Length: 382
Image (cartoon, rainbow, N blue to C red; front, top):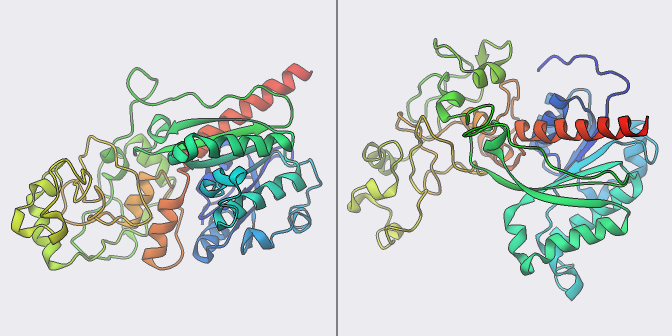
Protein backbone atom coordinates (compact mmCIF):
# COMPACT_ATOMS: atom_id res chain seq x y z
CA UNK A 1 0.00 0.00 0.00
CA UNK A 2 1.28 3.46 -0.79
CA UNK A 3 1.98 5.99 1.91
CA UNK A 4 -0.23 9.08 1.91
CA UNK A 5 0.77 12.56 2.82
CA UNK A 6 -1.41 14.66 5.06
CA UNK A 7 -3.92 16.61 3.04
CA UNK A 8 -4.55 20.21 3.94
CA UNK A 9 -7.96 20.84 5.45
CA UNK A 10 -8.76 23.24 2.63
CA UNK A 11 -8.08 20.70 -0.10
CA UNK A 12 -10.86 20.47 -2.69
CA UNK A 13 -12.96 17.35 -2.20
CA UNK A 14 -14.25 14.66 -4.55
CA UNK A 15 -16.57 11.67 -4.56
CA UNK A 16 -16.21 9.07 -7.32
CA UNK A 17 -19.34 7.21 -8.44
CA UNK A 18 -18.91 4.11 -10.64
CA UNK A 19 -15.36 4.35 -9.32
CA UNK A 20 -14.09 0.91 -10.34
CA UNK A 21 -10.53 0.37 -9.15
CA UNK A 22 -10.10 4.11 -8.71
CA UNK A 23 -8.13 5.38 -11.71
CA UNK A 24 -9.92 8.72 -11.84
CA UNK A 25 -9.73 9.04 -8.06
CA UNK A 26 -5.97 8.40 -8.18
CA UNK A 27 -5.57 11.15 -10.78
CA UNK A 28 -7.62 13.62 -8.77
CA UNK A 29 -5.53 12.81 -5.69
CA UNK A 30 -2.35 13.45 -7.70
CA UNK A 31 -3.78 16.87 -8.53
CA UNK A 32 -4.42 17.69 -4.87
CA UNK A 33 -8.03 16.62 -4.32
CA UNK A 34 -9.09 14.78 -1.19
CA UNK A 35 -11.21 11.85 -2.36
CA UNK A 36 -13.80 11.20 0.32
CA UNK A 37 -15.66 8.20 -1.06
CA UNK A 38 -16.17 5.86 -3.98
CA UNK A 39 -19.08 3.65 -4.97
CA UNK A 40 -19.24 0.66 -7.31
CA UNK A 41 -21.13 -2.61 -7.64
CA UNK A 42 -18.04 -4.62 -8.74
CA UNK A 43 -16.74 -6.26 -5.56
CA UNK A 44 -13.16 -6.93 -6.76
CA UNK A 45 -12.80 -3.35 -7.98
CA UNK A 46 -14.14 -2.13 -4.66
CA UNK A 47 -11.50 -4.13 -2.81
CA UNK A 48 -8.84 -2.55 -5.02
CA UNK A 49 -10.26 0.93 -4.43
CA UNK A 50 -10.36 0.41 -0.67
CA UNK A 51 -6.76 -0.77 -0.42
CA UNK A 52 -5.37 1.93 -2.76
CA UNK A 53 -7.40 4.86 -1.38
CA UNK A 54 -7.09 4.34 2.39
CA UNK A 55 -8.30 7.85 3.20
CA UNK A 56 -11.53 7.38 1.25
CA UNK A 57 -14.62 5.41 2.19
CA UNK A 58 -15.63 2.71 -0.26
CA UNK A 59 -19.39 2.19 -0.29
CA UNK A 60 -20.24 -1.10 -2.04
CA UNK A 61 -23.38 -1.94 -3.93
CA UNK A 62 -25.58 -0.63 -6.74
CA UNK A 63 -26.04 3.10 -7.04
CA UNK A 64 -29.80 2.57 -6.74
CA UNK A 65 -29.20 1.61 -3.10
CA UNK A 66 -26.92 4.57 -2.40
CA UNK A 67 -28.68 7.39 -0.58
CA UNK A 68 -27.56 10.99 -0.42
CA UNK A 69 -28.09 10.90 3.34
CA UNK A 70 -25.70 7.97 3.70
CA UNK A 71 -23.10 9.67 1.52
CA UNK A 72 -23.23 12.80 3.64
CA UNK A 73 -23.13 10.79 6.87
CA UNK A 74 -20.10 8.74 5.78
CA UNK A 75 -18.15 11.73 4.43
CA UNK A 76 -19.21 14.41 6.92
CA UNK A 77 -20.39 16.61 4.08
CA UNK A 78 -23.37 18.90 4.05
CA UNK A 79 -25.38 19.70 0.94
CA UNK A 80 -23.46 22.05 -1.34
CA UNK A 81 -20.05 21.48 0.28
CA UNK A 82 -18.57 18.92 -2.14
CA UNK A 83 -16.19 20.34 -4.72
CA UNK A 84 -16.44 17.66 -7.43
CA UNK A 85 -18.74 14.73 -8.07
CA UNK A 86 -16.97 12.47 -10.56
CA UNK A 87 -18.04 9.34 -12.32
CA UNK A 88 -18.78 7.58 -15.57
CA UNK A 89 -22.41 6.44 -15.60
CA UNK A 90 -23.41 4.50 -18.72
CA UNK A 91 -25.40 6.99 -20.77
CA UNK A 92 -25.96 5.24 -24.10
CA UNK A 93 -29.58 4.25 -23.60
CA UNK A 94 -30.47 7.62 -22.12
CA UNK A 95 -30.30 9.20 -25.57
CA UNK A 96 -33.77 7.92 -26.42
CA UNK A 97 -35.41 9.32 -23.30
CA UNK A 98 -37.51 11.88 -25.16
CA UNK A 99 -38.94 9.15 -27.40
CA UNK A 100 -40.07 7.07 -24.42
CA UNK A 101 -37.70 4.31 -25.40
CA UNK A 102 -34.58 3.27 -23.58
CA UNK A 103 -35.76 4.34 -20.15
CA UNK A 104 -36.50 0.66 -19.64
CA UNK A 105 -32.78 0.03 -20.19
CA UNK A 106 -30.75 -0.32 -16.99
CA UNK A 107 -28.06 1.98 -18.38
CA UNK A 108 -30.56 4.83 -18.65
CA UNK A 109 -31.69 4.17 -15.10
CA UNK A 110 -28.09 4.40 -13.90
CA UNK A 111 -27.78 7.88 -15.37
CA UNK A 112 -31.03 8.90 -13.67
CA UNK A 113 -29.53 7.65 -10.41
CA UNK A 114 -26.43 9.75 -11.05
CA UNK A 115 -28.68 12.80 -11.52
CA UNK A 116 -30.38 11.98 -8.22
CA UNK A 117 -27.03 12.11 -6.42
CA UNK A 118 -26.09 15.36 -8.16
CA UNK A 119 -29.38 16.94 -7.11
CA UNK A 120 -29.02 15.72 -3.53
CA UNK A 121 -25.37 16.64 -2.95
CA UNK A 122 -25.29 19.82 -5.06
CA UNK A 123 -21.54 19.63 -5.79
CA UNK A 124 -19.91 22.75 -7.17
CA UNK A 125 -18.48 20.81 -10.13
CA UNK A 126 -19.26 17.61 -11.97
CA UNK A 127 -16.94 15.47 -14.11
CA UNK A 128 -18.31 12.68 -16.28
CA UNK A 129 -16.53 10.36 -18.70
CA UNK A 130 -17.92 8.25 -21.52
CA UNK A 131 -16.96 6.53 -24.76
CA UNK A 132 -16.82 8.55 -27.97
CA UNK A 133 -19.56 6.39 -29.46
CA UNK A 134 -22.02 8.42 -27.43
CA UNK A 135 -21.86 11.06 -30.19
CA UNK A 136 -23.22 8.66 -32.79
CA UNK A 137 -26.35 7.74 -30.84
CA UNK A 138 -29.37 9.48 -32.31
CA UNK A 139 -27.18 12.02 -34.07
CA UNK A 140 -25.83 13.35 -30.79
CA UNK A 141 -29.12 13.07 -28.92
CA UNK A 142 -27.44 11.40 -25.95
CA UNK A 143 -25.06 14.29 -25.43
CA UNK A 144 -27.86 16.85 -25.77
CA UNK A 145 -30.02 14.94 -23.30
CA UNK A 146 -27.22 14.69 -20.73
CA UNK A 147 -26.53 18.43 -20.92
CA UNK A 148 -30.23 19.27 -20.80
CA UNK A 149 -30.87 17.14 -17.72
CA UNK A 150 -27.89 18.60 -15.88
CA UNK A 151 -28.93 22.07 -17.06
CA UNK A 152 -32.33 21.54 -15.47
CA UNK A 153 -30.48 21.03 -12.18
CA UNK A 154 -28.61 24.30 -12.62
CA UNK A 155 -25.35 23.02 -14.12
CA UNK A 156 -23.74 24.45 -17.22
CA UNK A 157 -21.90 21.58 -18.93
CA UNK A 158 -19.44 21.32 -21.82
CA UNK A 159 -17.93 18.17 -23.28
CA UNK A 160 -14.81 17.47 -25.29
CA UNK A 161 -13.03 14.41 -26.64
CA UNK A 162 -9.72 14.00 -24.82
CA UNK A 163 -6.92 11.80 -26.13
CA UNK A 164 -5.11 10.05 -23.30
CA UNK A 165 -1.79 10.05 -25.14
CA UNK A 166 -1.88 13.87 -25.13
CA UNK A 167 -1.46 13.75 -21.34
CA UNK A 168 1.40 11.27 -21.01
CA UNK A 169 -0.53 8.00 -21.17
CA UNK A 170 1.27 5.50 -23.48
CA UNK A 171 -1.97 4.48 -25.18
CA UNK A 172 -4.35 5.60 -27.89
CA UNK A 173 -7.53 6.10 -25.92
CA UNK A 174 -10.34 8.55 -26.75
CA UNK A 175 -12.94 9.52 -24.18
CA UNK A 176 -15.65 12.17 -23.98
CA UNK A 177 -15.21 14.20 -20.80
CA UNK A 178 -18.06 16.35 -19.52
CA UNK A 179 -17.15 19.17 -17.13
CA UNK A 180 -19.81 21.32 -15.51
CA UNK A 181 -20.48 23.65 -12.61
CA UNK A 182 -23.32 25.50 -10.93
CA UNK A 183 -21.18 28.56 -10.20
CA UNK A 184 -21.41 30.42 -13.51
CA UNK A 185 -17.69 29.86 -14.10
CA UNK A 186 -16.57 29.54 -17.74
CA UNK A 187 -15.82 25.90 -18.59
CA UNK A 188 -12.79 24.64 -20.48
CA UNK A 189 -10.80 21.41 -20.76
CA UNK A 190 -7.11 20.71 -20.13
CA UNK A 191 -4.72 21.53 -22.94
CA UNK A 192 -2.53 18.71 -24.33
CA UNK A 193 0.95 18.44 -22.84
CA UNK A 194 2.50 15.57 -24.84
CA UNK A 195 3.14 14.94 -28.51
CA UNK A 196 4.88 16.55 -31.49
CA UNK A 197 5.63 20.25 -30.97
CA UNK A 198 4.56 20.07 -27.33
CA UNK A 199 6.48 20.32 -24.08
CA UNK A 200 6.89 16.53 -23.79
CA UNK A 201 7.00 13.73 -26.39
CA UNK A 202 4.47 10.92 -26.36
CA UNK A 203 5.20 8.18 -23.82
CA UNK A 204 6.15 5.09 -25.83
CA UNK A 205 5.56 1.45 -24.99
CA UNK A 206 9.28 1.08 -24.20
CA UNK A 207 9.05 4.10 -21.89
CA UNK A 208 6.13 2.35 -20.21
CA UNK A 209 7.08 -1.32 -19.82
CA UNK A 210 10.72 -1.68 -20.88
CA UNK A 211 11.91 -2.11 -17.29
CA UNK A 212 9.69 -5.11 -16.53
CA UNK A 213 11.51 -8.48 -16.60
CA UNK A 214 11.06 -10.94 -19.49
CA UNK A 215 8.64 -13.85 -19.14
CA UNK A 216 7.81 -17.03 -20.97
CA UNK A 217 4.27 -17.84 -22.02
CA UNK A 218 2.26 -18.65 -18.88
CA UNK A 219 5.14 -17.83 -16.51
CA UNK A 220 4.34 -16.43 -13.06
CA UNK A 221 7.28 -15.52 -10.81
CA UNK A 222 5.19 -13.71 -8.22
CA UNK A 223 6.67 -10.41 -7.13
CA UNK A 224 9.61 -9.54 -9.35
CA UNK A 225 12.42 -7.03 -9.37
CA UNK A 226 12.70 -4.48 -12.13
CA UNK A 227 15.18 -5.04 -14.94
CA UNK A 228 18.61 -3.52 -14.44
CA UNK A 229 18.09 -0.72 -16.95
CA UNK A 230 18.05 3.04 -16.60
CA UNK A 231 14.36 3.78 -15.98
CA UNK A 232 12.54 6.33 -18.11
CA UNK A 233 10.85 9.30 -16.45
CA UNK A 234 7.51 7.49 -16.80
CA UNK A 235 8.92 4.33 -15.20
CA UNK A 236 10.33 6.34 -12.31
CA UNK A 237 6.88 7.88 -11.82
CA UNK A 238 5.22 4.46 -11.89
CA UNK A 239 7.75 2.82 -9.55
CA UNK A 240 7.87 5.44 -6.85
CA UNK A 241 10.09 4.00 -4.12
CA UNK A 242 9.28 0.35 -4.93
CA UNK A 243 11.95 -2.22 -5.74
CA UNK A 244 9.60 -5.09 -6.62
CA UNK A 245 6.30 -5.24 -8.47
CA UNK A 246 3.33 -7.62 -8.53
CA UNK A 247 0.85 -8.62 -11.23
CA UNK A 248 3.54 -9.35 -13.81
CA UNK A 249 2.46 -12.86 -14.79
CA UNK A 250 1.99 -13.98 -18.38
CA UNK A 251 -1.36 -15.47 -19.41
CA UNK A 252 -1.16 -18.99 -20.81
CA UNK A 253 -1.72 -19.12 -24.56
CA UNK A 254 -2.64 -22.41 -26.20
CA UNK A 255 -0.43 -24.43 -28.54
CA UNK A 256 -1.92 -23.11 -31.79
CA UNK A 257 -1.52 -19.47 -30.68
CA UNK A 258 2.10 -20.14 -29.76
CA UNK A 259 2.61 -21.50 -33.27
CA UNK A 260 1.25 -18.26 -34.71
CA UNK A 261 3.22 -15.72 -32.66
CA UNK A 262 6.73 -16.26 -34.13
CA UNK A 263 5.42 -15.18 -37.55
CA UNK A 264 4.24 -11.79 -36.29
CA UNK A 265 6.92 -9.04 -36.33
CA UNK A 266 6.73 -5.81 -34.32
CA UNK A 267 3.89 -3.80 -35.81
CA UNK A 268 2.57 -6.92 -37.56
CA UNK A 269 -0.78 -8.60 -37.17
CA UNK A 270 -2.89 -11.56 -38.29
CA UNK A 271 -1.90 -10.83 -41.89
CA UNK A 272 1.58 -12.18 -41.12
CA UNK A 273 0.29 -15.56 -39.94
CA UNK A 274 0.38 -18.36 -42.56
CA UNK A 275 -3.10 -18.98 -43.91
CA UNK A 276 -3.25 -22.55 -42.65
CA UNK A 277 -2.58 -21.36 -39.08
CA UNK A 278 -5.28 -18.67 -39.05
CA UNK A 279 -8.44 -19.22 -37.00
CA UNK A 280 -11.17 -20.61 -39.24
CA UNK A 281 -13.23 -17.44 -38.99
CA UNK A 282 -10.33 -15.31 -40.17
CA UNK A 283 -9.41 -17.39 -43.19
CA UNK A 284 -12.26 -15.72 -45.05
CA UNK A 285 -11.47 -12.21 -43.80
CA UNK A 286 -10.53 -9.38 -46.12
CA UNK A 287 -7.00 -8.07 -45.72
CA UNK A 288 -8.48 -4.72 -44.67
CA UNK A 289 -10.45 -6.25 -41.81
CA UNK A 290 -9.57 -6.74 -38.14
CA UNK A 291 -6.54 -4.48 -38.29
CA UNK A 292 -5.58 -4.94 -34.62
CA UNK A 293 -6.14 -8.69 -34.31
CA UNK A 294 -3.05 -10.66 -33.37
CA UNK A 295 -1.16 -7.39 -33.32
CA UNK A 296 2.35 -7.16 -31.91
CA UNK A 297 3.28 -3.92 -30.21
CA UNK A 298 6.28 -1.83 -31.24
CA UNK A 299 8.67 -0.38 -28.67
CA UNK A 300 8.55 3.11 -30.16
CA UNK A 301 4.76 3.24 -30.62
CA UNK A 302 1.66 3.71 -28.53
CA UNK A 303 -0.55 0.92 -27.29
CA UNK A 304 -3.96 0.40 -28.81
CA UNK A 305 -6.85 0.98 -26.40
CA UNK A 306 -6.52 -1.30 -23.39
CA UNK A 307 -9.77 -3.25 -23.11
CA UNK A 308 -11.20 -5.34 -20.30
CA UNK A 309 -9.80 -8.46 -21.90
CA UNK A 310 -6.32 -8.21 -23.42
CA UNK A 311 -7.05 -11.09 -25.77
CA UNK A 312 -4.60 -11.30 -28.67
CA UNK A 313 -7.46 -12.47 -30.89
CA UNK A 314 -9.08 -9.04 -30.51
CA UNK A 315 -6.28 -6.52 -30.35
CA UNK A 316 -2.59 -5.69 -30.40
CA UNK A 317 -1.72 -7.22 -27.05
CA UNK A 318 1.35 -9.24 -28.00
CA UNK A 319 4.59 -8.13 -26.32
CA UNK A 320 6.97 -6.25 -28.66
CA UNK A 321 9.67 -8.94 -28.55
CA UNK A 322 8.53 -11.80 -26.31
CA UNK A 323 6.11 -14.43 -27.65
CA UNK A 324 3.35 -13.91 -25.12
CA UNK A 325 0.39 -11.71 -24.27
CA UNK A 326 0.86 -8.67 -22.02
CA UNK A 327 0.47 -9.09 -18.25
CA UNK A 328 -1.94 -7.30 -15.94
CA UNK A 329 0.96 -5.11 -14.78
CA UNK A 330 1.91 -4.22 -18.34
CA UNK A 331 -1.73 -3.36 -19.12
CA UNK A 332 -1.80 -1.27 -15.94
CA UNK A 333 1.38 0.56 -16.97
CA UNK A 334 -0.19 1.28 -20.37
CA UNK A 335 -3.11 2.77 -18.46
CA UNK A 336 -0.63 4.80 -16.33
CA UNK A 337 -1.47 3.05 -13.06
CA UNK A 338 1.37 3.42 -10.53
CA UNK A 339 2.94 0.14 -9.44
CA UNK A 340 1.64 0.46 -5.89
CA UNK A 341 -1.81 -0.26 -7.33
CA UNK A 342 -2.33 -3.93 -6.53
CA UNK A 343 -5.48 -5.26 -8.16
CA UNK A 344 -7.76 -7.59 -6.22
CA UNK A 345 -9.67 -10.58 -7.53
CA UNK A 346 -8.93 -13.18 -10.17
CA UNK A 347 -6.64 -12.39 -13.08
CA UNK A 348 -9.69 -12.01 -15.32
CA UNK A 349 -11.20 -9.52 -12.85
CA UNK A 350 -7.91 -7.64 -12.70
CA UNK A 351 -7.84 -7.16 -16.49
CA UNK A 352 -11.44 -5.91 -16.32
CA UNK A 353 -10.54 -3.36 -13.63
CA UNK A 354 -7.59 -2.08 -15.63
CA UNK A 355 -9.47 -1.86 -18.91
CA UNK A 356 -12.52 -0.13 -17.42
CA UNK A 357 -10.52 2.60 -15.70
CA UNK A 358 -9.85 6.22 -16.47
CA UNK A 359 -6.05 6.43 -16.82
CA UNK A 360 -4.78 8.15 -13.67
CA UNK A 361 -2.61 10.60 -15.65
CA UNK A 362 -5.67 11.68 -17.63
CA UNK A 363 -7.49 12.07 -14.32
CA UNK A 364 -4.61 14.16 -13.02
CA UNK A 365 -4.76 16.44 -16.08
CA UNK A 366 -8.47 16.96 -15.48
CA UNK A 367 -7.88 17.55 -11.77
CA UNK A 368 -5.02 19.99 -12.38
CA UNK A 369 -7.22 21.93 -14.78
CA UNK A 370 -10.10 22.08 -12.31
CA UNK A 371 -7.73 23.40 -9.65
CA UNK A 372 -6.68 26.17 -12.05
CA UNK A 373 -10.30 27.06 -12.78
CA UNK A 374 -11.14 27.11 -9.08
CA UNK A 375 -8.14 29.31 -8.24
CA UNK A 376 -9.03 31.69 -11.08
CA UNK A 377 -12.59 31.89 -9.69
CA UNK A 378 -11.26 32.64 -6.21
CA UNK A 379 -8.98 35.38 -7.54
CA UNK A 380 -11.84 36.95 -9.45
CA UNK A 381 -13.99 36.93 -6.33
CA UNK A 382 -11.28 38.47 -4.11
